[in-house]
Length: 505
Image 1: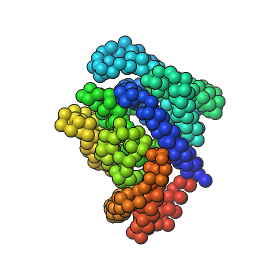
Image 2: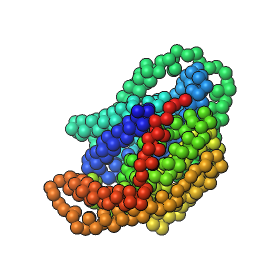
Image 3: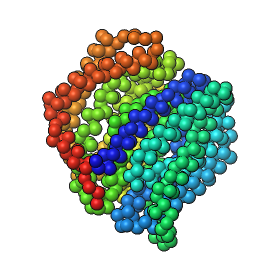
Image 4: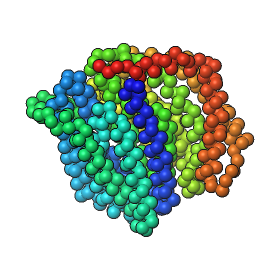
């Protein structure tokens, strides 16, 4: 079968294995850390992501765009130069930013963590983790470009598996609980850097070592010009996705950050069946654009936009129905207030998902400035609304601001993309999916109120058994309605199959 299908299969495999591992990690931390320390650690992810755009400087998007261009031109010397340029640029920037954050740590603690006692030691370890992870992430970008999702899948599974093992081991050794997450992530990151670097240099020796470097300045100029345009989008995108935790930390406390972090990560589980496509299709679309195969791009994106609701809507509705049961089963009563936040953010995931698909088009066809303008507007909107709403509705206000900003971004992206790519949106088909999902919701609520029982003394096992039964029965009804309404047809299946089996040029 064609490698596009194989890549999607590998990404799905890693996603299905990584999610339970990452959730096991979160549950272990939630049960063994004070809620304040839990909030500090996951809040730091949001804090450091805020500075991630400076480290990245738009290079990841530029690398995907130009590596596919150079590959189409058969210029291995340019691909090699691009690889090393990206590695040293991002590593150098991460070192500089890490030093700045280290020497500014007292100001940061007083501003955002005035009452948290353990922040100092965690913060320093986190800086080292953030720097080392830079190399692993830049390696991963090139595995994606080379369409080697198999190694990316292995590395992602290994990364979180090492974190889980180290966390359990350190708990057994009775190391200070609040330090365990930072140490576990740092050790795992160093391990993956060693493995991924050795692998990529051995596997792609003929591309990354053997050819001579391309020494003309025009390569650096065009890459830097592209990345500098993307950096604006990176700044605003970070404002949209990461400043929520910073705002909550400033206006509330680490405990509230912990609740929001649990809710946000739980809501993102809803992308399990659609996110693998995003990781695979970006390099494909970039390659097809350089080969001037616009109709193929239109076919891929139209097919996705007309069917993604079919996969994600039942999951969104399931999380709305079972949010409280999920929190009690996985995290316990201390996190129960996160359940309502989950319900709000679950709706936002619908828009966040479709935005990410449409964003891929603009970044893959070399329109970073247009994308930047859109994300700047929505990023600023998110900050303003979050600050305004948190004073009225608390942490729920931040969640509402995220949803509203995502909706605004959807309209702006759709308007921009239609100038370059003709997307054929089948509104009738999408309405049929929404109509079918309504029955899925009603049937799920009915089953929850009638057959939700206690089977064992293990709370989480009861939850899994009940959800498996109810979701299976409701999905059967949902699938039957989709087939009856001809949303699922043999012709669509054959089209998707042929699309994935296309020969590469």
